[in-house]
Image (cartoon, rainbow, N blue to C red; front, top):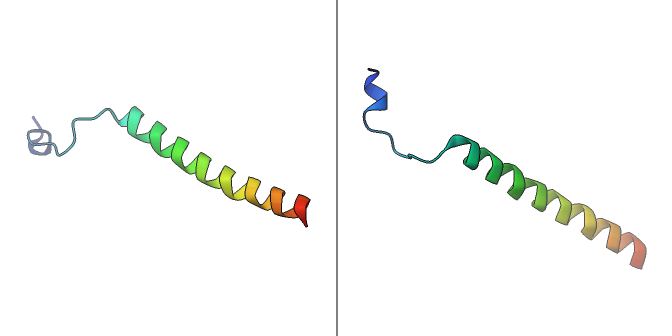
Length: 43
């Protein structure tokens, strides 16, 4: 057995972590995009 697999820091599933990171970044950039669209529509 690999010695690094004996004591892992996080036992979470990597798919859940990567999905959560994708969703958070997608929401963040969508918020920036829609803020620009609203500013252009108002201005």
